[in-house]
Amino acid sequence: MKLIVGLGNPGKEYEKTRHNVGYMALDMIAKYLNIEFKKRKFSGFYAEANYNGEKYLLLKPEKYMNLSGEVIKDYVNFFKIDLKDMLVIHDDLDTQIGIYRLRYQGSSGGHNGLKNIEANLNTQKYNRLKIGISNNKTMDTKDYVLGKFTDEELTKLKDVLNIVIDIFKDYGVMSFDNLMNKYNKKV
Image 1: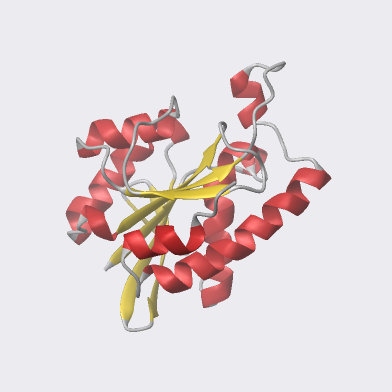
Image 2: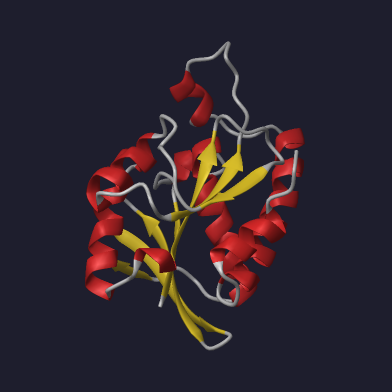
């Protein structure tokens, strides 16, 4: 079983904010699979699918971003997910909008959701897809990440979210090293 987690904050007020890129990516995958997020367990909203002979669990933690790791840990333990079969999709302030990066380990880079994941899973070794949201150093970081995308930013983001579908299609059939080699382009 593969677990794909999209990080974000629950609630209408956070829809289409920079911090909810993970939720947006999962929504694209769910739309592609023609499934809906209808089930709740362990403070998470999830959907299940079978694709190319593999079972997938798509998870949106419903605790706020800073507590995402608690929810993920419950799912990993309950469903007996091997961490090599988990992919976390999240926003990245240090990457420009329109750019994404697959990584299999690394530090949180100051991202509170990732810090909580690392604290709860006791490791920095898990697959992640970082989606750039740029950074506006003239604004408070919290206000920036909880702010809505501009129309121009949404256009760039839409291109990345379409690539997320391709990454998903290959995720179950390629090693993560091959996935990184295929999708991580030199910028």
